[in-house]
Length: 281
Image 1 (cartoon, one colour):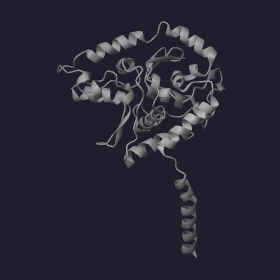
Image 2 (cartoon, rainbow, N blue to C red):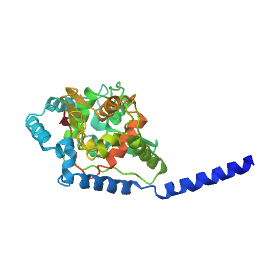
Image 3 (spheres, rainbow, N blue to C red):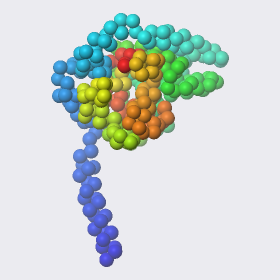
Image 4 (cartoon, rainbow, N blue to C red):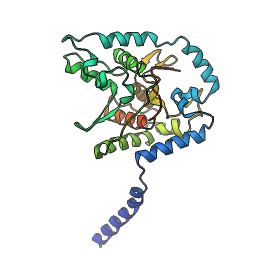
């Protein structure tokens, strides 16, 4: 009798899981559905304008932001990043000697799947790998010099379109799916997912803030948050801040969880132009 119950249970499990497997969507299908959703929700917003976050969907916020952009608060960070980028290491080499494509104008290439290691490589991780490989100490990942170097690389990449690939490799697809799962999974005391604010309720207000669409989020990184931080910060710092807002323990910057999330979101912004660094409230 016990064996019969187990057999029936197993059969039911297979029958229930089979439809889920059959309807699983590919990254290409996800990208189309993601775009279609935002186009339907914000029909007056051209696709190319989603790189501007909440300022692409709210006119009042946009006017305030455009006034600030006349004298960008991140200009000094770009200059500092350029100096750091070009300053030789103790061994005489620079970032240009070890970053993909020489570093300049390459922001749209990150993050990418490394087939040798099976891991996702972000720009900030590549910067620190470059440093360590040349005998230098790694930088902290959330702000400061690493954000400035990233800002300079982003600035030299403006206008280049994001082109992230999900190669035909089970490990790459697993990383993508991990990021997708993170995006839709509820967490924290408020029981919210990334998608609750930036997908389903994008354009709605949470207290005094309007939730921005996820489409285009990675294009403007790193970001100078003049209302919250008063300084420049990386995408993973922003991820951590979101987790704190919903009273969830944040993962460490450059954790596998955040790298997978970055991979997923950046892929869904394929074809959009880099416009980092940017300023946000």
